[in-house]
Image (tube, rainbow, N blue to C red):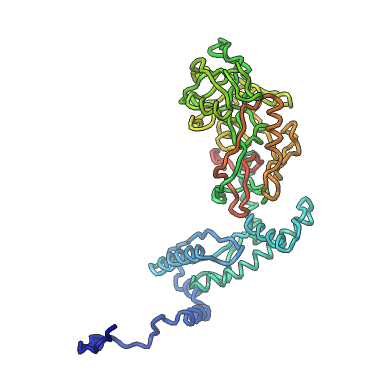
Length: 467
């Protein structure tokens, strides 16, 4: 390798006459920033800003508060710094821009952290049926929130965010809780507060409802069943459609445990349906030769493959004919002795399943919505059953299955699915069964599967006049 030879080229950097400064290249920020923040605190910068802006037009930034349940992360920093820029710019433009920081201290995030500490120490959850245990648990949550509120306050200050840090607000302050109660009572006095129910994403592990933002999807293996509902009555413009009286409407679901909650079947007037006859069965159980099934025409072959049967199309079935059908619940002999009407629903497609959707209003958003819209016109009991409790157990409103469990408190599959499938086999209502691996909702905290279940809740009516 040849050596680099010296060059006579001039060093042009020596010809640059730049200003000289003792200011460090990196500004000495690790040392200087704490000094600057200490200086602001020493001179009472926030108070002096308020005094200088007294009498000006006010600018108030209503800050959505963070949870006091751990150290801040980059999301907190981005949020607070951007808001600080807004407040400072408004102050510099001539407004009185006060900023009062706050913390949300209620709800599951803090409770979950306390339970994590229990698990780490091998402690059991407290028995919250005891008032004393509830108060002790709340006291632990309050102490935990106070600890992290203080830590986060110093972390936000270290970011250089200026505000009334000595007088923040918190949702757990007793005067704040009292004000919340007073405001709710105003809705009650105006007749806007009422008790109702609605199906929500429910975590059996965490014993709480979850918002959509708290849900994430993971692979999960579900049981699939194809179930036949016997047609009870078939009327069209007052005339009986006799060939449908001996037929079955076949539904498909990946949640067999919701069958006890079934109260209707949904179809779509936009889907083509047909009446099919079973002509052969590869197995010695299940569908019988000669049985007639109502299916979406596009899905009939898929159903036949899943059930290992052969089907012959008898005739087309118009949506007007489906509107006049009423079925019997497949488990009617266990106590489900009510009519099962058919509803025309926009959510039904012929992309998968059978073209008919098993409708359990207590276990699905679309099920609930179509039930609320159409059940009162169907001449049936409109009450939504409460079949599964907070702990994932069937209640007495699921005859034949009370005490069976959908999901355990560890997030594992319980014995409910198998119990329902065995009952369907015993009732000669099972057309086929299989398993499906698919994306299923899980809690982002516990990473365990959740269920849709009807829960009693308080609502505030937004469509009524009030004083």
